[in-house]
Image (cartoon, rainbow, N blue to C red; front, side, top):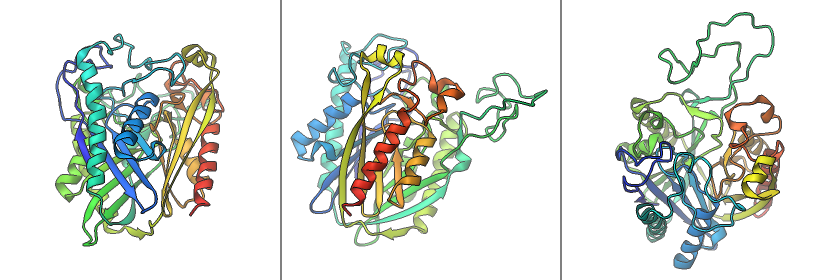
Length: 420
């Protein structure tokens, strides 16, 4: 595993405000893990960015293949969905029909591609990402893989509570009772609402050398990286970046976070202190998960991918000039452990469906990987509930888009499982 600093210049504009970033609160990174069983080689890459768009993913795969020889379809690119960093740049047109930039990226400013500082960062992102993969290849060694899990339900909340539709006569819930309200408590729901689903699991994969020492740690859970972003207009890796740093400082292990199906999941608290607390407490849970982890056989690696056309809503068709948009799912299996990706911002229900139907007992479901897909995506019926995540601009797929994605993912998992 290796990492490289991908922090842009402060002259680059913040997509949230349309103005230059105000400070570098902490640097952002690309991290890369290269795995090889003697027959198949794959690279898993994580960017501390908002997304890993189709164009940026394709460009990185091409550069890695050209320089390092790893097949393009053996390269997985995941983003932490960190709002205190840029969106991945667009390196070539046509990946999403006529759409180039997502509307979020140009909501408060024009595209930055003619800006020399932004173009410098575009080149830096690719150069550093390829370099991180090269360094990871150079440091490969024989390892065993260990798996542990921890309950992180106290650190996350479903931001789409289920409203009550009948029988409520009076409510004491204040107006705009959210993280900006002085009395807000994420453990409390008013108005007779019910809590939405969460994935309570953090999965920890530990790779250990022949002496039993950790050489790399992957931790995986589902939660937006938005703890610090509402209160600071600078650059930061938010809680995922802080947790990776804490892993290194406290446990002496190189770490990588892989984001899950976090489309409807927020962190428990907001602000700078929340980042510090979450990083510290997650690191302690990772430490415990490692202590009680189980060694799993990982002698073989299999990789495959599939593309499904997601039918678009009328606004989606207008945005892209397409009837369907290609959405990639990818599977990398390490023995009995499967990592499967979804593009865009999948909600919790998609991850639940895939885990329940996967032939692999140990299945990690990633969102924000290898493309934007239709942006937010839920299971059928989610659109009826309303909310930001199903808006005309934020959710471009039809109501069955999520079902098509998860069915494709499960079919791909079955195909890969049969190779084991």
